[in-house]
Length: 126
Image (cartoon, rainbow, N blue to C red; front, side):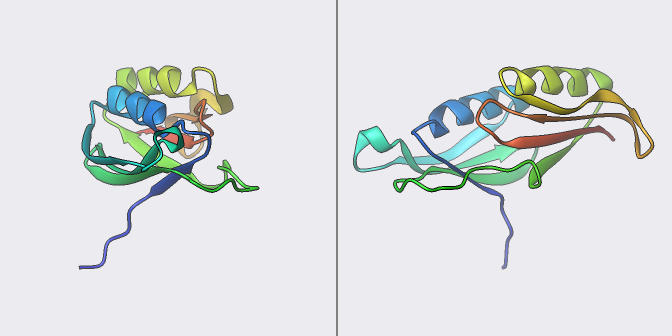
């Protein structure tokens, strides 16, 4: 069966910290995690389950001239306002706010933040 899964590639060995943030924020789970042979290079590949979706995470063993961009983001439909506010605060801490939590024409409650690792999150009250 063909599957499409988000793949988050980090640089600088920060994948483990990002995984910790995401699992805590979403009450998620780590299905598997394999370190690079050189421990200084971090996580070779991990698979998480976040809100029922499988997400792959890795620390790149090669330095790249690119990183995450807000134009690609993870869109999360939140179950209630409390979850939306909590995720906005948790994921946005130490990162960036692209659109503050508010009512917009397409949503009664929406926020768009970039976490401290550069991953972009669009958080919507479903």
